Image (cartoon, rainbow, N blue to C red; front, side):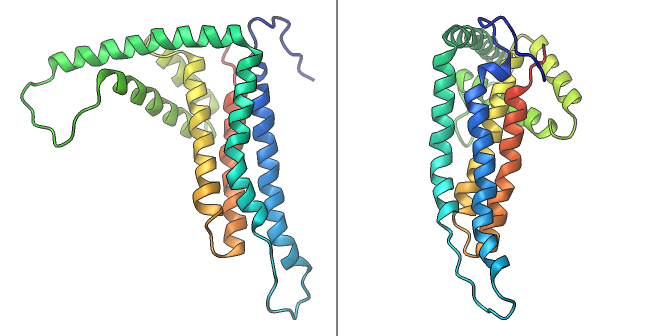
Length: 219
């Protein structure tokens, strides 16, 4: 058994995000349970039975309740660790300011007079986009090669434009968003019960990845 840190004022990520991790684990289990509710009647039906009545409600219910459950868990974590939240927000202000400054410097050296078909992002919007892009790269790389993903996070951190926790948290958000999109857009709308169950199960790996990223502590 791994001991939890004694310094509660500086929680490890698995403590900082404990409620979210627990809610993600619950949702992973709910994905399996909802899919099983569709598969089991088919398995129980006699071989000669042509049509089997199944209930898609568990999948639909999960697709509607997963996001509020995870958001509530995240809010509970924030309420449990106010000092950590304050520190994270201060760090985010500094790193965002660094990205904004870099974006503004790039704007100065860009060729003037170019006619773009759509308005370019502001420096502030560009800073947020940069964080999301970095998070997507980390979330995609982590399942295949966690050490390489961790090394990449350290490179981002060394630039002064990101913190390791900031990148990991954004990668958690990206993984959760992918899982919820599968549940809401694919599983809940599939016309075939088997496809509905399969899509419900396909959401689980994204949520498992979110657990791994929320638990990861590079220190």
